[in-house]
Length: 167
Image 1: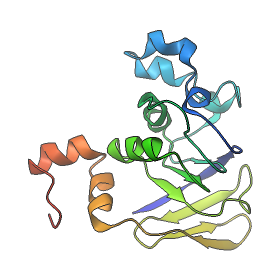
Image 2: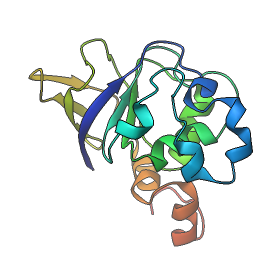
Image 3: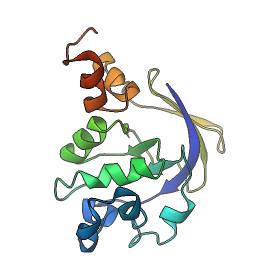
Image 4: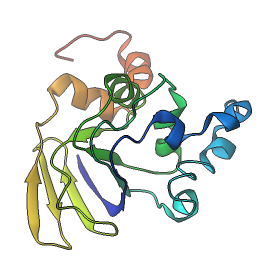
């Protein structure tokens, strides 16, 4: 699975409330409308400028806070193809994988805003085309790649009827 897109860079400690502020809780049943407010307190133009395939790049502790499953969902709804971070809150990571949004843990220090990236999920590589550098991350296990390739855990289970490693 190869992903290509532009970087939107954020810092450390981006919480689920930064990703989708609690004041928009009333929109949780209207995901496209909710997504219009994604990361607006950190970058007011993010939701209007992000394009299908783009990447969110963060620092340490990305997705901390509540287990708000809408946080990765609005990113995916806007077309974000993956989140690259130095570290991630476990619940954010799991919620993201469950909806088919890869979270890559890697050293993001050398990646800058607007860089163009090519990510090989199976190979564990990130090519920063803009800077001419290559980074690595721990490649996903086969089971997780299968979940991601089906668009998340629910689509995987609907297709295969169960989750069995080796399918």
